[in-house]
Amino acid sequence: MRIFTTVIIAFRALRRNLLRSILTGLGMIIGVGAVITLISMGNGAKAQVEAQIASLGDNLITVFPGNVTTGGVRSGWGGMSSLTVADAEAIRDQVPSAIGVSPSTSDRAQVIVAGLNWNTRVQGESADYPSIRSWPLTAGDFFSDQDVRTTAKVAVLGQTVVNQIFPDNDDPVGQTIRVRNIPVRVVGVMKSKGFNTAGTDQDDFIIVPYTTAMKRITKRDRISQITIQAKDADSVERVQNEVKNLLSQRRDGRDPDYTVFNQVEIAQARNAANDTMTWLLAGIGAVSLVVGGIGIMNIMLVSVTERTREIGIRLAVGAHGWDVLLQFLTEAVVLSLLGGGLGIAVGIGASEFISAHNNIPVAISSFSIVLAFGVSAFIGIAFGFFPAFKAAQLDPIDALRYE
Image 1 (spheres, one colour):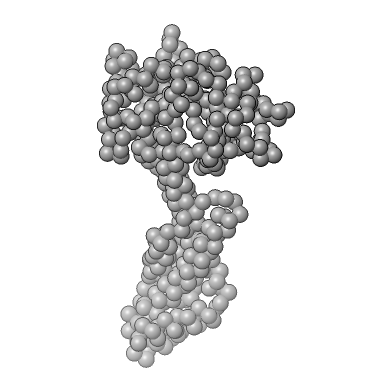
Image 2 (cartoon, helix red, strand yellow):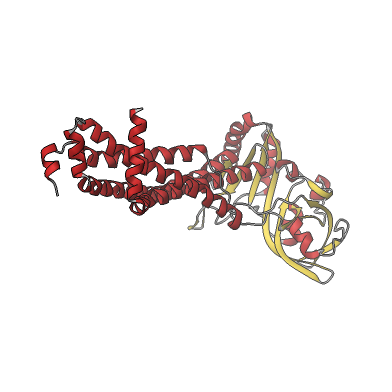
């Protein structure tokens, strides 16, 4: 009952100076709202990265070109490819747990059909590609191993390309398009995946056999990466190590000119970057909480000064210093929690608004709400203690004499 009465008195004291109380709590509202919004955006980005990595395929391992030194000329990661089709074939033949291997090439080219044209990404892949990437087709079929061996002039289109060069909803399967003036027959259409977290349209591509891409379209003898699917999740790390050892043997112990990643490592790297940015921004929001706490301490010191005679009267009629300390500390905590509660509402509202109007993913977590509310309570106690302690130490006689 005593605590309840103390809280009621605290509300009355804050209501007497309502505008001042609102302005004092504004720092807490902004700080808590900013922390929740920024953590929600970071969690949303993390969830989107995880979904995107999962959409790449199951148990995926990727070999990227690494540092290369040729004739004294040094090239950084990905600057020059030393990967060959023979590397991919060796992995297919000598790594038993690799159930799918796709040598990949990538370039851009103009695609033309019936007077329409579109510049898009031309990927060279193996027949294992849709299985590796867990990417189904919506029309037709994917090309076969026979098409790869014979460098067949066939292609599978992404949905964006279909929309651009077949705007009248014509069935593209069976039709012929021209890629760099090379006639290519469309055999299938991939299911749409939309944009990824980097803002790249995942459906803006055509896929041809890698042999066709290398010998007929790009005229290159190196591949840009090798995509591998392990048999199951438990064998991913083993396959990754076997691939590293095999490629090292094929290079006679030379410094690695490749980098082997699995999708877990890719996700961890991207999430680490997201986490760093999220907590950095949340730290900036936390500065507002500290500023809000300083504001609370300042206003409570003013309140102690204004109510010195009131404190003296309470002490003179039998109140203890602990009662005075508890009263002013309660007022600080109530002010802080009210600001924190309003800040939570502002943070949730801002997160939903950003998600709805800017297509930015957000994920509001109970952790961020509890954290923000707990921090606001702590700040109320930490910054309210000194003014409350000062009030409790006042001498009753001096307080009654105060004008």
